[in-house]
Image (cartoon, rainbow, N blue to C red; front, top):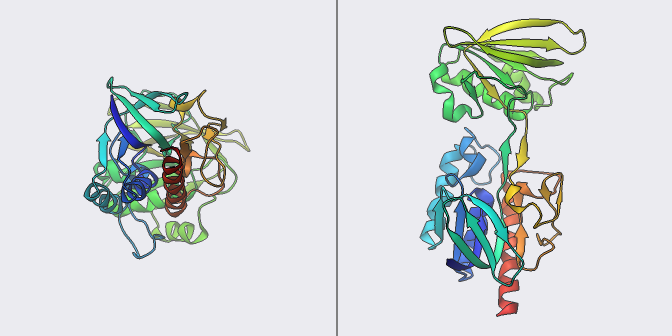
Length: 304
């Protein structure tokens, strides 16, 4: 078993911020990340609300965080998926899918959220959740974007910038909730169309590999089919909390914490998008992480 003062579960901006504070407090610290560090910010093509930079690619921002984390000597274990935990004792235990066991005197859960899947079952293989990762092959092609929020519009504009011929945004609600300025940019592009009160009924694969999407206007009940080269889905996110079910108190899958990021278990904290909260931004996640790390340090000093 590998043992540390603090284990941070999740290597996104929240987890890396917590690790930076913990390491600077001379706590032996480990990050357990089921994929690669950076989380959903890696998929953001442009971050324009991060202090000190007018605009920065999400992956570049996360690389800078990662460099700082490693320079401080934090142990970073990637592709290490926590499957279950035991928080019953003074030493918290975490078990991963690779068969490893980790022990820690304190734990910060910063597992964030994951994209919600397309709401219909389909064998169509060209369904994506990241335009930065998967958008390039759609140059000069037509795609459907599911979701009319900020992510849907931002990613649609990014796809147009990659050279996508046309983007059709499909929104189930009667209106889109993306920022007005972003919607204006979409209209001005001349390459983005929007359908509200519209749901996807089914997606079939055509012989040439393209998809045939059956769309339904919920107000009128009218249906029509539209062929597309690919689908990008941005309909919100759900919390990554399955390993902690039964161990931590949750509300709709989100971990309940107090103002000090404390869960109901001494020495176990949660921070960022995985917690019950109103606003979920890069900067709010960093703030939560700072509090969680400082409280973890205080707790560990007290129980020494």
